[in-house]
Structure formats: structure tokens, C-alpha cells
Length: 287
Image (cartoon, rainbow, N blue to C red):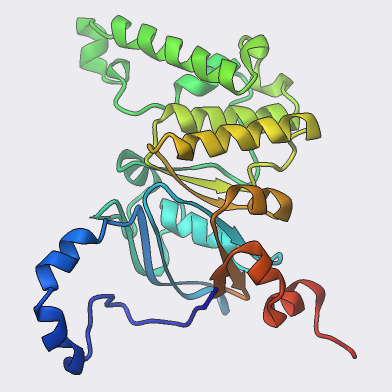
């Protein structure tokens, strides 16, 4: 377990007394350190006089499944909004897979392989489940007017439809393929949003309370699906979740936010025994 503290914007600064030692191994060590899937450096975000995120810094390794927990109002969803480009009014740096995505808009962040889901799922109410999934994948030929007139987009669309149906089957949505978004239950809306995100083939998937609204019967299936996405080696997941049992089952590393600050990281058993975390969830002790 490691306590976290605020760091400077530069994650490469090295005290002068250590530089000589590093020069002997410099290039070899740098080559051996893999590029993180996600890097957040000194990120801060305020709304008026309220500081929602306070100088947060962390890395997420490629292929990791990391949980982000904290009490209500800790700043978790705001942090996800900033990373994903939904909120661009923040200070600090965000990188993904070696690329700088700081303050890029949501769609450009998605094009760089970072896709998110939202705390409240909102499918398009007048589109079928299949059509809701089809709007997700980027660079569709039929989106360009000139290609629509010339033709040649039908093959790509058939491929996408096939992939969408396969994804729906995996998430248990095949039987509601032709249902409209307005006809879905809350749990089905959540699964549609997750399916659409997965269909985009992200390298980094940001999940904001993915188990919210999902029936107890489907939660274990969803957990297995998410675990499989990471196990396949093609995806990294950062997940905000209040249900700690799923965080413990799925996440090898957990980050804790309290009052906008990242205060701790470790395994769930380690975090549960930390006095500051206990106080944040349960309030100060009166004993």
C-alpha cells in the first residue's frame, strides 16, 4: 500500500545527486519501462469556488484493471470527465498510450483509443438497440457525404452489423436487438452503453459505475465479461464503482479519492484498514 501526495507537473525531474547514478543505466532503464496506458499529472478542476479535483497524479499500466473508489462527492466522476475530454476546464496533464490528450474534446480522445461510459446510461430512445450500438465505432465510411454518394460503404456496414450482433450476444442483448431505447430497463440501458463502448475497440476503457442498475443475475456475468476484456490483453480498465465487492473481485489495484484528493492506493484489504479511509466513509470516530 502506498500513500499518495501531490507531485509536480514534471514526472521526469531528478535530484542532482541521483543523476550521475541514473546516467550509467539511463537509456537501458528507460527502454525497459513500458509506456503507461494512462498518465494523469497534477490534474485539478474547480467549479466556482469549489475545488472538485485537487492535484491528482497517477499512472495506470497497460493491461491493468484499476478501481477508483471514494465517498460521494470525492471527485471521481469529475476526474473521469476530465480524462475523457467531457470536461476540458482543468489544469494539469493527461496522457494515453504515450500521446498527450490534455484538454482534447471527447471525440478526439475516443479516436486515440480512450472510451468511457457514463454514470447514467442514456441510449438514443428512438433508435433500436442495434442502431444504438452502430453509432459508436469511429471512421465509418457512410458518415462522409462524398462516400455515401459514390458508394462502397455497404461492405463496412455489413461487417459492423455482424460485430454489433456478436457483441450483443456476449452481453445478453440479442433478444432485444429490435427494441427501441425507450423500451429498455435500466439494466438493459447500462448493457447497451457498455456494448457500444466495447464495439469501439478501445485500448483504455473508463467505466463510471458499470454495475448500477444491473440485476443481481447479470452482475456476475458482467463481471466475467469485464475481466475477460482485460485478460485478453487488449484493454486497460479504470473503473469507478461503489459496490466494493466487485472492486475487490476485479481490480488488482485500487485508488482512493477523498474530497478531491487521491490519498491512497493498494489492495482492498489494505485500504479497508486505513484510518483515513474509514473516517471518509463512516465519519470521524466519537470514541
